[in-house]
Image (cartoon, rainbow, N blue to C red; front, side, top):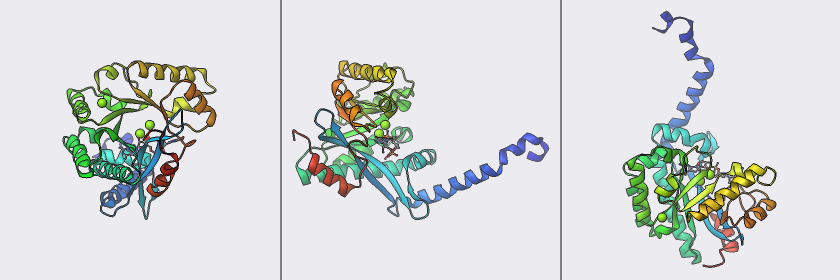
Length: 282
Ligand code: C2E
Ligand code: MG
Ligand code: MG
Ligand code: MG
């Protein structure tokens, strides 16, 4: 019993912790009903060609609108969704909705607009994952090459045979694969030649000070050159200022994404945005 184990045992039950776990339980019970209650929403952030500023693709980002919690951002609920396994049905909903949306824009505008979807480690390791992705493509009739799955280096660090197999299956199906938050995962670079990635997304932290910090500009330049040598496409994340776009243009960074171009937008606003900024070559 705790009370016989000395003073330190009591430290396990501080009022702050009770509060944290209470909030957690509160959020978890709401999250269990959120899909049914239709509380999730996708917003879409344009990814543009750096040289022209024209739309190439979009990243689907998840929002949770709950009457008692308000709009909850992914950094606040994705970790809990991962821990509880709820990320599996939620992630399936995201992939289904994202594919449907992209197919609908294709039909509406005649342009091929790629859609990037974030995949978390727990989701990726679910044995049903590949089937979920293939079913979303079949249900929506979206061309597989318009779907890009974003995976972090954290997931690749867990360098198992299954990881390699799943990436190869997805690649063989024609789906594009990107490394999200590139440069933050403390990963060895060798995975870039063994796994079938198409794209590197340079983490926002490198772009933020690219004009003022010569280490950051050297790193960004090196990442772009390395990626191109390996036949990979590069996207700069978190572009907020015009001067950053000049640097990225001069370094031949293929694509850019960030508040300078657009914040993530609800679907109707995104459609409006794309009608005015469609890519140069449909
Ligand atoms: P991420 O995949 O790296 O997505 C980019 C994040 O940076 C988004 O935050 C986006 O709104 C934000 N961002 C874009 N441009 C700028 C900029 O110029 N400046 C700044 N300061 N931020 C910018 P968001 O939507 O809050 O998402 C945070 C993270 O949550 C995502 O990071 C991703 O890891 C995760 N996430 C979002 N949606 C999903 C999802 O459907 N499934 C999973 N598993 N994870 C998701
Ligand atoms: Mg992402
Ligand atoms: Mg490929
Ligand atoms: Mg990122």
